[in-house]
Structure formats: structure tokens, C-alpha cells
Image (cartoon, rainbow, N blue to C red; front, side, top):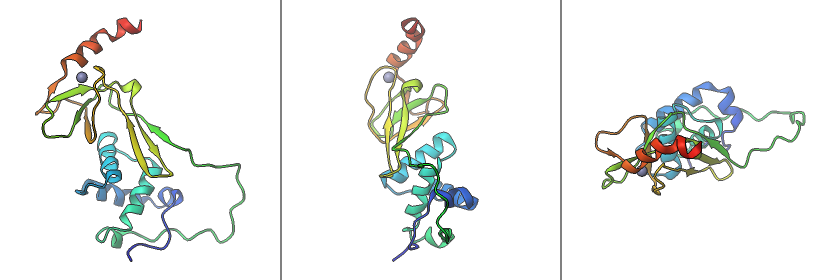
Length: 179
Ligand SMILES: [Zn+2]
């Protein structure tokens, strides 16, 4: 059995900075197809960082990876005395993370896809559920098309895609319809 008995906690992530670097390195080299890790990888690529709760999830996946495991320090020892009770500190049911790109292109990763749509940033976010360690992207593009996962976000139009004309039209008229 690989992995330490205990899982990493948010406290490990906050107090042991090298865990962050190890998780980023691991994700950047990840070539598997486990949904959670693929989503985390795309998130890291698009945003340049991972929130604590997602990092913790990645680290706990790494514990079961034959190659990654030996690089990991053990989780911090549990506090010997129970910590003084804090006012109810409940983990949020979910965390919404928004993109930092101003006007990103979004395109499905399927080979047959030719069009890149314009992401409606104000109506899109990546919802992360810490309890189940799952991402649920809430994605809206300007033209209203439904995009299927996996997809990627890029700040510029990818070479092998053309821009969605309808998206561009909607963006052009957006200020009028909003005003
Ligand atoms: Zn479109």
C-alpha cells in the first residue's frame, strides 16, 4: 500500500510551502486521464495557481502515485492537544473560481473542433466541491453554444482554430443590450 496513513490537510498546504511546488511539478508533468487531475492541470495552466483546497486534493492523489509518493514529506503531526475551539469553521460547500483572463477563448479539446468561442467571463466560473473533490465548470460562451469537456482556455486564438463569428457579434452588441 502506497501512501501515508493520514491525508494531507489544508494546514499542510499552508504551512509546508514545498508541497505546493511538488504538486505544481506533478501536475505539469501529468499525462493521465483522471478527471480531477486533468481539471486541476487545466486550472493551473489557465490561472497560474491552485487554491488550497484543490492543492490538498492533488497532494492526496499524489500519495497513491508510485513515482510521486517518494518525493512527498509526511503530513504534519496532528496537534497533540485539541486546538482551542474556534467559532464554527466549516468548509464551504463549494468554491467558485473565476478566470483572470479578460476575454479568453474557449475551445473543446476534441480533435474535430474547429471553432474557438469567446468566454462570457461574467457568467462563467469553475465551481469546486471540496467534499467530493470534484470540479464542475459553469461555462457560458457569448453565442450560447454548449461546450463539452474537456476544453481549454487560452488568452489568444489557438493556431488551429477559427474564431466563432456569432460570439464576436454578440460581444459587439453586448454594451447596447446591457445598456
Ligand atoms: Zn461562439
